[in-house]
Length: 130
Image (cartoon, rainbow, N blue to C red; front, top):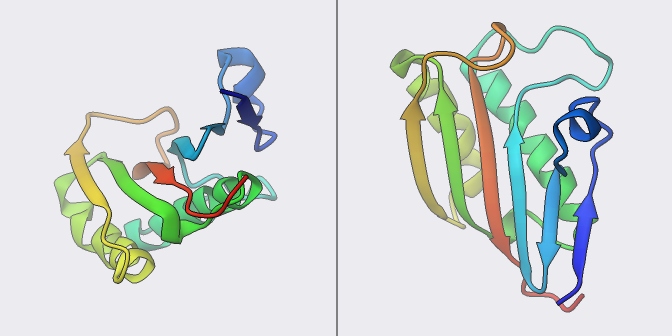
């Protein structure tokens, strides 16, 4: 099967050797998305705002792969504190209220940037032809 690599232009991609997303057949795997702002500004200070930003990045990667949030079948979320769950959950619930993908949420000690409260990754099965 053909493998489509999708870049977001992140400076980490060539250094670490990864893609924002990879499409193989009807599957799309979106790497962990942190709340990185397009203009390099500070991310939102709250978990809701950060989750919204992460989901925007996920949605953009899926769009470049020929899909949308509606194709998501699984999300994984990494929180730096369990107290951030409600804010994250509100944003995730808004995005996926009707889609209801499988989800795993874990609390980790830290993420790469101390301003990041969470990171979101996703897997999708595209329903539209390539």
